[in-house]
Image (cartoon, rainbow over all chains, first blue to last red):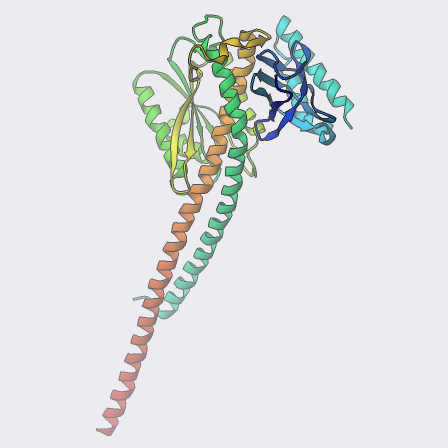
Length: 131
Length: 293
């Protein structure tokens, strides 16, 4: 088993990171999880939250406003709708995502509403920690 | 025969036109580079999105529970054509070629008795289509004064499209834009975005081993709208690059034509100046001859 794997973080506008890492912590839709080399291939959607890419003593943290991840033998691809380095993130950057999430609550019912509400509150919590 | 003064005025006006077209060409060249970079940067996301989607979609195409975005509604009666053009002219045949491409399809679909509606993105397309097909318009979006296409614009376009599809207003949605091939070649394209045209991956590949969280249908329902937005985003970026490419070559031609015009007019100016001098001389000489004689 390899010690590191290839991790790529892409947003529609650009490729944010393409690095080797020992483990990656991801905010999965069904709960946070950590992926290490040799993880079972999985495709999962992601909640708004933080992604931590750890390689040795180095740790980089990104914030995403939702998206999905593909974990395969070859590595991990994270496709985020909007992403930023934690150190550079501001509440302002996520304002439009937050607004869109709030708007998407309208007209939903039951499960879908619960899901959307959860996403919205996650995002809101994340934004409130900034600034 | 224009007078010398008229010629001089014309030469100066063509010269200043040449300066303008030259400047526009250089601005377009700089913008083209930026547009190409943006298109380049969006590729990794789109490529991965396609891979993941085709993995999931392969097994689900015939699944009756799969979202309609993938399967289609089972009918092809109601069409929505999303025509993406530029905000500004002076870019050769760029806008017209997209409009011409969409006109062909509109006429064909109408002749087949389908219900056709049009949504215009960009001012130029709306202006050109309004006269003949104004009654088919449902909406038009313009990004006037916008410096750089971003994902937010794609979302702005995708939102009403997806909303209308979710409300069951359309069966097939097609996107019209221009694919950037090179500075001199931009190909108008028609891309069907709903139902999704996703290339199937071969059976027995590594795809069958994936686990899905939440289940496949929930993921598909989440991913397909995103994929539509990404495709629209890509179309907008291709369009932006094509527009600048087309403008660059159109302005290059214009600059060259203006140069030729200046040369031609200058020659004409010099000839008539010489002719004027010659005839004046002849008059003086023949006047002197007459006195002497």
